Length: 90
Image 1 (cartoon, rainbow, N blue to C red):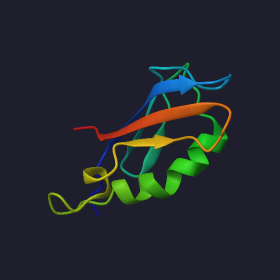
Image 2: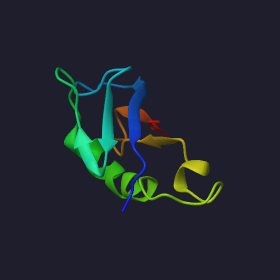
Image 3: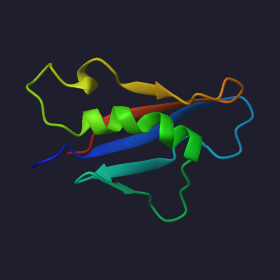
Image 4: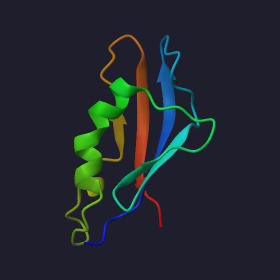
């Protein structure tokens, strides 16, 4: 099976989050998580992203994929709002 490659970037941090910084990026390539050296991904944020990322890597017809309706995802921490942008990494 062929999967979409994804790039996930933190685009906004509102509140006291010590684990996330704007501009941090990680990838999903061939259904595997890749975190560049020196970058970190919060376990709580990652766990909230996994179902969406799993759906986003599936190749769909144009206009029928999850990324056609969803471009950003918010961490579930109500006091440290972190927004992730999810996009295909072509």
